Image (cartoon, rainbow over all chains, first blue to last red; front, side):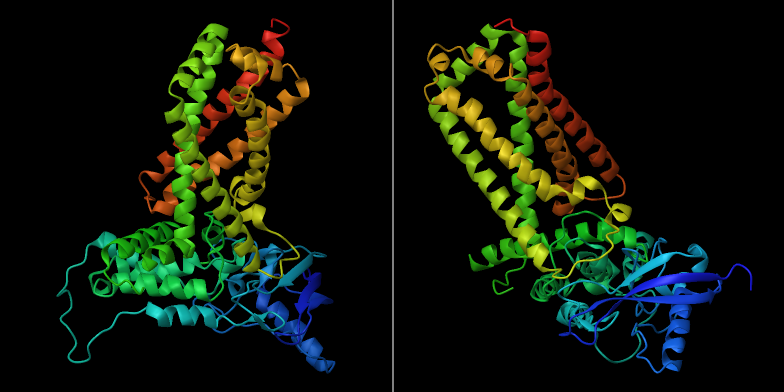
Length: 256
Length: 223
């Protein structure tokens, strides 16, 4: 078919967390510009499997930009060169015939490589387990609108809750900091009445866990916001900082 | 007090220390610049200003000590953050796309900070040591002449101006970054803070850099 592309791929391959990794060059031919980036990798993997070789391991699930499973740093950009999309939403029409594409995994101490392009993002789960939830009594369903919430608060909360936890913020940050992720998960509750009982406990526990997991510190480069597929604002980081200071000043818990 | 030091040692706490000390240094630079601009008043005015500072020496010494403490905290925390942040990504990227998602000022804070530190040492050697530790002209209260002689060296003046431009890089990011760290970021007023930061930076860079340029080109051999 006309308009199809031949590409050179430089893909990071690493057998497991402890193995030495390196770039391997692959040539893919006759790629349709209408195929997605992950479909292009599927085609490569089918060729590799047909030859009896080990396919390139990469993570994916919903392939419609909402699950947060896909990753990949493409030519130095998490989720590729386009703003506000995940890798699965990136299409090959944004590349040119003959291009060389560098494909790397998320790079962070807190995201160890499992295999090839797949990293272990359990550290995010640990942060959520530390406090990224609200405790709710079981029982009858409460009346809708029993607690009035302003439209502004709802908008802030839902904007923050759009975070899919993919880790692009960590991958983009020159310090591998998880501040944008943590700030979204703190802010989505901090601005709502339901989040108030555990507000200060939550922010202290989540920041403590974030530091324990080996993420870097935020130096306000705002690369995270630029690369976030959901456009999570760095104003959430300001909210996180405010809540952290307030927690330290107001909470009487000297152990936190 | 354990909670207090634990808080300051958290990732957000270290940022907070950087921001507070940074703001103190921003304010100090304003006072420093006002003092420097008296050089444009000529030898008499500048020498009188410095002589007046001599008369309140104990107070000046206390302020200098506080200033040293602020500098040490800022530098110590900055270096510590840089080392820790390097450790957070042991294996780097082959292709670096950071120019696409962040500005140069924010990415070069450690480099510009390091160069400013070297400048600071040279600067203190040239002026603070001369003014305070027995330069023959200082004994005669001819401080203006010390400045004029230092900047009569073209190489020294050019390096001075270059250092001021790098200081501008550092200040431009630092100003708005401090507000973000304090959590004072809001859709309405943050653009104003960013513009204020740029104006502050331009005033500081042009103000400080104008002095070596003035002495090099316009003051000439008029010593």
